[in-house]
Length: 533
Image (tube, rainbow, N blue to C red; front, top):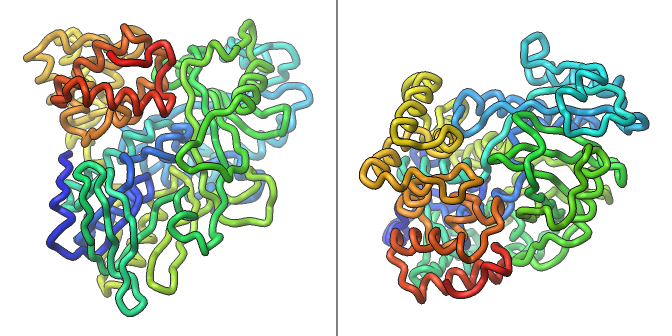
């Protein structure tokens, strides 16, 4: 993945997409595969806002059945089934447990009906993937971290998991390979019009500190939370904040869906990179779009609700390893409770021809993006069908995936990569993995973990820095490899990492210290590790 600012100049495009989150990435990839001339820009990094602040799930949304949103659930479950086949390295099955306690809002009878319907909509009702019901003792044995007091029984059901930032990045790479011009750190500062119709945008690159006029026959706005800034006169959306916490490991290979006692909301406890992902909150937001923070109220809510159900664990603020907050963009609604507002998506068309994507879910973004590109093609009088439905992901090996994975694990063992890190390398890089093995063959010390407690090796760090359009330190240590949210790093632990990065990216001491200062201001690492290194 190479960033080339000159690609934006000297040529008109069929479509310019503004916003490089999951919706922008799918739209660019689909449009480029259909043969359109595509430009995609983002004012920050790829997936640097909402699309790297999700619950890391590919799921139908079991809770949406309560609000009778069957269409959204069915659409999402179709996408889940398709993605599990098209991207087994990027999306993998994850089974969830639902404990039923005395006095639970969701009792066993309601859950049995809801899970049966969920399996039916997913097409798994009569398969081994269907939900299961367990009595109290079996369920408690299955999830030994839970308090057995007041536990009546429990269920398990199937959904799926991903790494949202890498999911988005792979689509960006796919769009690049299909001929799109994709530039991060390029901000749309002004839309250009001709006879009242939008025809392009002025784009400023913070990397080159240059501006250029980019002309396109169609413009698509997929900027998510920044919609209100770009079109302040249009009250098309509302924002809610979701917070997640990273805590020590309490689960093995299955997750938990829980119900908060305080407000009846659903929240998750999910295994992620060997730790526990706890979230999420859902509160109205009207603050600074550039400073979306984890507040003490968010922390207390999540820890209190988790501690209600955990046995022999009483998580405190000091146990939090990392955290992140993101904003959901929801359609306008008269409903006052954020969780009651539909997560479905819509496309708005302004009088000047600007197409604006509003709302939606990470899981169903591909189908929604296909509708965006259908509209673009219709407006351009092009009859090009969607190319992304069922298409293998860009990094998926062309051979049998299970056999290929077994061979890669054997090769990794021969290079002295530990099994856990090797498994994550397959998920993170797939068919690009031999290039990482090449790095290790030339420098065997790169097979070592970056941090002993996490399954990331030094060769992964070097490869991402060289080949994944990294412009800033947090691009690499928050989204390419999420160390900033998975580890509390001291200065002594951070220094060898930044030494490798500086050498790989040819950063001098001034550049490195400037990057560290930016990350410090964003609160991306602990106070004891701040300062010049």
